[in-house]
Image 1: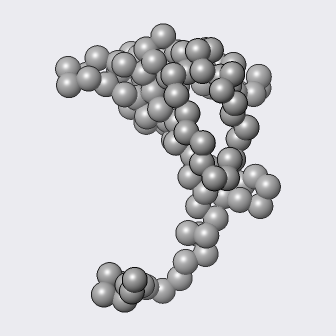
Image 2: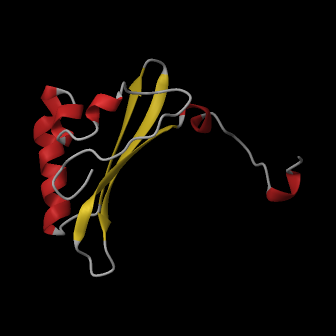
Length: 108
């Protein structure tokens, strides 16, 4: 989203965690989140704009997956707020890792 809280872009991964359509481009970010979390989204955006925070992160279990959700403030080289980015990662398989697999163990 840009500095005015308007969605400018989203990617289309092979598997979506949350439904997004092209219709979200050009609308306010709060319209992309459930009503019950709007107050938190607003607090995150305000903390980014004020310079108080640069990252907000959460993790949830949903539909058998463990998702890590992070919001990042985007700033210019003078720390001026330009907008924010949301990143959602599926960590389900990572949580299952045990032991070690070292760089030298890699094969192509």
